[in-house]
Length: 80
Image (cartoon, rainbow, N blue to C red; front, side, top):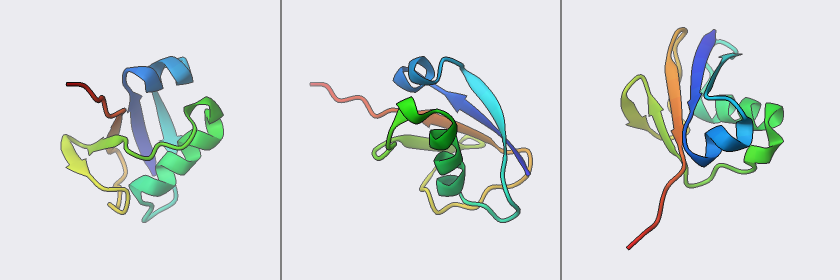
């Protein structure tokens, strides 16, 4: 399956790109795609606390992906 991964903010800076297509096995989860992303771009480090948006819906890492999905990854931003 092909998944378009879009990087935002500090994740885009760490990866050096704004988006990339990843191949994922059938029945893969968001977590498995994120693991592949971090293997390819180790500077991203662990992405705990990231916000995952799969085809315009906020999801958790256990969500299954479908072929052609778009996964956007946003770092959480603190402030006050």
